[in-house]
Amino acid sequence: MQVTEWNDWCPGCGNFGILNAEQQAISELGIDLKKVVLVSGIGCSGKLPHFVRIPVSGVHTLHGRALPFAIGIKLANPELEVIVNAGDGDQLGIGVGHFVSAGRRNVDITVIVHDNGVYGLTKGQASPTLKKGVKTKSLPKPNINDDINPLTVALASGYTFVARGYAYDVKHLKELIKEAIKHKGLALIDVLQPCPTYNDINTKEWYDKRIYKLDWDPVVRNEEDKKKKFLQAMEKALEWGDRIPIGIFYKEERDTFEERISSASPSYKILPPAKVKIEKEGKPT
Ligand code: SF4
Image (tube, rainbow, N blue to C red; front, side, top):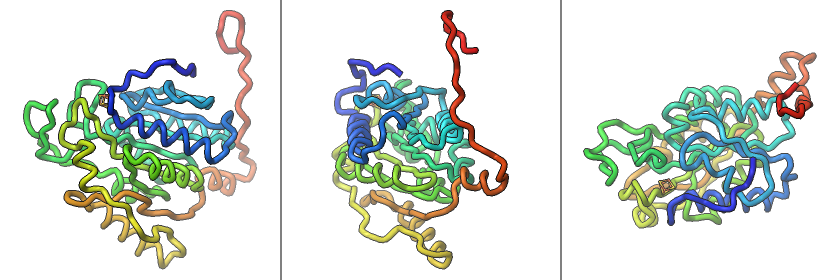
C-alpha cells in the first residue's frame, strides 16, 4: 500500500494518538518491518495504513471484514505480525459476527478498535458503543439503543488478551500495544477515541476527568486462577460513569489456532506465501 503525503483526519481527532502510539510501539519492539501487516476496515480509522510513516505493509479491506482478512493473512504466513485497525461500528456492528467467532480460535493477531461512539466517516450516526440516552450534536434525538461493551464481548468470546486504552494518552497506549503484540494469541485493545467533529459528549475534557489506570494483576496463572481473573475483568469492564478504567483487564496463555491445526493434523503444513507471477498486463497467473 502506498503511503500518502497528506492526512485528512479532522484536527484533534483521537486517531492521531492511535497512529502515533502504534508506530512507536512497532518501532520500539524492533520487529522486522517487512513482516508487519496493518489490516483496516471502512471508516475514518480505515485510513490508518495509508497514513503510517514507517515502511510496513497495509491492506485496506471491506466494511466489517478486516478480521477475516487478517486471519487469512496470518494463517497463510504465521511469521507475519498482523494488526487490525477498525472502528467500533466496523467491528461491533456489521463485523460483530467475525469479532465474536475470532475469540474461539485464538489466532495470534492484535485487534485495535477505534472506539468513538459514532460513524464518523458518514456524518456521525450512533455506533454500537454509544450509550443509550446520549444525544450527540450529530443526532436529532437521543440514542434509543443499548450499547455493546467491547471488553465484555471479547472476554465472553474467548479473547486471551483484553485491554482498554485512551487515544490522548499516547505513552500508555504505546505500552498496551507493545504488550498486545508480544502476547501469543488473540489480543483486543479497545481505544477510547474522541471524535471532536461529531461526538461532543465523550470529549477529551469528559474523558480526562474520569479515566484512571488499573493497578492490578490481570494474568491467569492456572485453571483455578482463571475463573477469578475472568470475573474480576468482567466486573471491572462494566465500570463506566464517574470513573473509567484503562489498562490490561485480562491476560491468559492458551494454545493458538495455528498450534491447534498442527496438533490435530500433523500432516498439515501452513504453506509459505504463494509466489504470484505478474504478467505485463498486470494479471496474476
Ligand atoms: Fe476523527 Fe471524527 Fe473527524 Fe473521523 S469525523 S476524522 S473520527 S474527528
